[in-house]
Length: 303
Image (cartoon, rainbow, N blue to C red; front, side, top):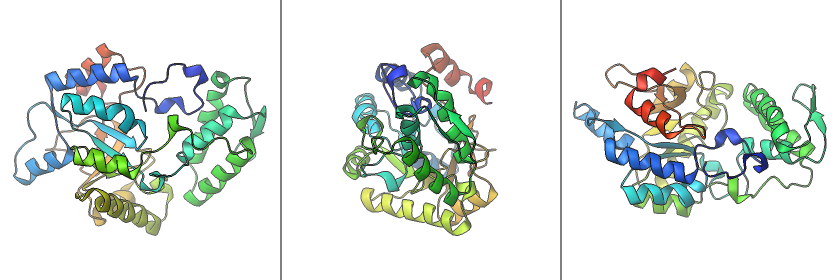
């Protein structure tokens, strides 16, 4: 996500902010001047011809499907001729409900109560303002990400009801999802869309049938809307604990050709695991010198 002028007043998970709009413009100016931005479809076409990727190739990616990918990033990318890939969780597109982790974060940050209860029963004492409550958000989200999927869903509902009984945590456009009209327009303009599941679960905590559904239904929905083949999936959360051999095998069986993690790193197509592709992270604190250094010396920043 983009552009939070006052972090201490922002009532959602601040860790999801990647850049201000001005910083993103500068980053894409640099990418357009010094690199060859491509899509995964272009990469796969080269590999199918037994050709290496183009020199200085990179792929710009976004996860989840936040509306500001359309309202902020799309114009910046289009003006510079930079393609990108957006991985969307299809169950949230067109809904007036924020992503589950944003609902929880907002409920905790905006709660009128000074205390609550963590999953498992441990007391959770909330600070007096948003800045003081951010550690509590991290604790809650970390606990949720370790749970079996059914239990996570129950706990999300419980936590939102506990901290936000008035239901104020949904529908905030600062943290809302794309619409399918956004997806159609961006796809027609050359933005690539990949799967990020249906409901954004932690896939390693989901049973086999659930994983299959997440992969096949999301892929079918995106293809129906865009008219383009979906060959790539990015695993929700994407850390080492969020996907495993079972998840990778299910991605392959569902017809995907590449699986994208959120493990820090970069890839050489001669040696990679195509279902555990790593990425370099651009965060809100990634200044311009660091951004340029990451692209110039990716191995230095590969975890």
